[in-house]
Length: 254
Ligand code: ATP
Ligand code: MG
Image (cartoon, rainbow, N blue to C red; front, side):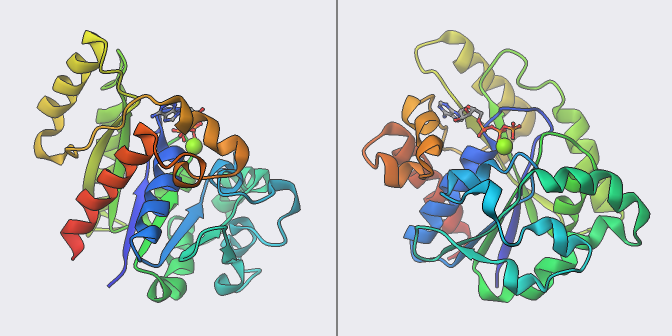
């Protein structure tokens, strides 16, 4: 049985793409068959896994309008067991163009229905908004992983996100659950970070993963080399943390 995770939070820069790319890599290295779906017009999961955004023969965009068969969209990465359906700026048009098509919220779900049997895990990297793309991701997913940055306004906007999850549960996807909240960019040297960790745990209780991702410069450097943290610096605290997070999740599905 495959699992589809939407990595989502409408707040920008909280670690969605970093989490999607590195968690997917860690799953793949643990022997799982994994697919990353880049569902953000910024295409940062695409470039972060070493693909050239400008020269993509096929992206997720076209198949949203049934121009490609989904299997043709799947492309190799430098990592065994890890594939990607890439995206680039073309996808920005979908926000507007999807308004015109029928069943616009379940387009991604239909695409993934055909490909999910090939994979153990599919991770969808969402854009920083609660628009139609994120709604498509939540409709296609079994569960949502919510990265939350350890900063002062961490909880701001999260009730809006939870409301969106509830709306999708009530209509388009009753099976959607919260896989977990992952605290990112934690700076153990500051009281503020610890305060935020406590606040988020109070709010989301046992929905928060035990693994907390530290702030680690190596995680920020890796994407510019088109590499996951495991390829870029396997000894870094970032690599260690994402490996632990992957184990924490894999345990649930053993
Ligand atoms: P967007 O909303 O724009 O899609 P995002 O939520 O996907 O952003 P990322 O792109 O993953 O967030 O991270 C934002 C920035 O912070 C990036 O430059 C990334 O390299 C950096 N970053 C992410 N996680 C960490 C970390 N744990 N330590 C240090 N830097 C990090
Ligand atoms: Mg991103």
